[in-house]
Length: 226
Image (cartoon, rainbow, N blue to C red):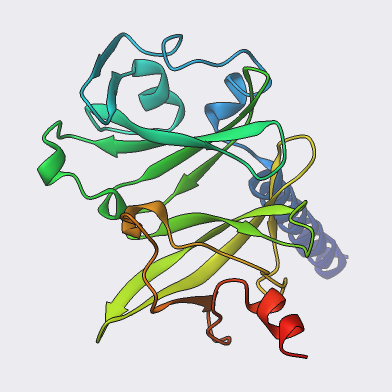
């Protein structure tokens, strides 16, 4: 009788343990950072900043709100710019976390980058890009109607410049960012803006990790050569 009770007790413990694991796993899968507090609400940098200063190229923000929701310890968030997303009504604004205001000391690829997707002055979604990674807005279909964000590493070697894509995201019709498979065809991907001066380097190629190196407009060029 005692032996049976011990076996039942062990089985009960195993069931409880498995249930706790599933519950914790589910929370981790579906949880979102504190940025949900500002998503789907009117958005402006002024609204969430205590102090804003400008120079000829950049805007420097001091924001306790951004530091809190993104768990950042930086002194400043630097707006490097914004750009329209394809043919949509959405724009992406880039903020770089930094402790410096001296532009000569700031290297965005060595800092954490935060992207804010907005439409009609409403914040739709955000994306955190870790240090040592760059990003580029890319084309995910032939007609340039599906727009994505390519996140990866940019290398320059022997005059050749290559953007190796490690993560792919699609921006849907609601302005939401969702991660997609690296096997997704990328029809075009410009060099990240930090590496584009007056014109894009002629030696530039892009491609996903372990895949082929592609020239820009490779799909159009392949059709023209048929």
